[in-house]
Image 1 (tube, rainbow, N blue to C red):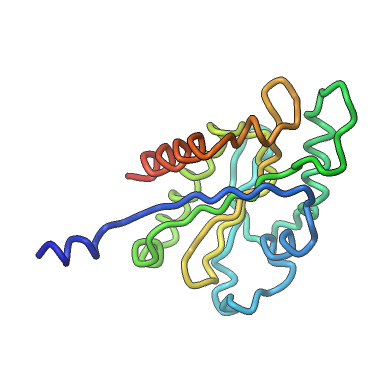
Image 2: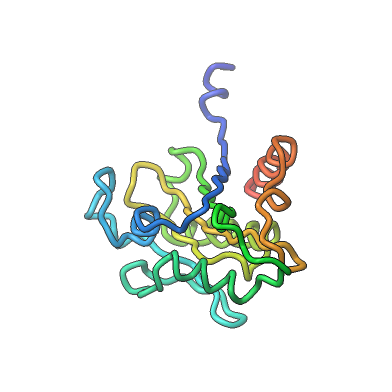
Length: 187
């Protein structure tokens, strides 16, 4: 019986990568400008993005989104929010690429409404952690084996500095992030 309960355990993970460029290939993957080899083209219509327009948060289909390229969105957010006194270094981390996912069986079994609710809870979690204004990309992919979310965050501090070190922190801070994420995703 104990073996059976172990296999029923659910999990969720948040993975954060720092990037010094809003390179084209990742943006094309996230926004589905290019079809990945591991994606099922018959499920592409299930993908969607969450965008904030004014005070409204809404989901839109990736193919209908007509979003600006990811690199443009990152640059625009920095231009809008950066208030640092010095020029931004060429090797500065300008974006955090965040991937959010969980147990394959649980996520694959969700219906459209449940996936939308899960995605919105993830969006709210990231907005609380990093500031809603710093989320420049949020795409839900359901056309790959396990549903997952790609979020792109510009690491601007509340006082307008670009600082991934301050925003992401060290391993201890990342462990705390994983714990807060797991707690937020319990429901």
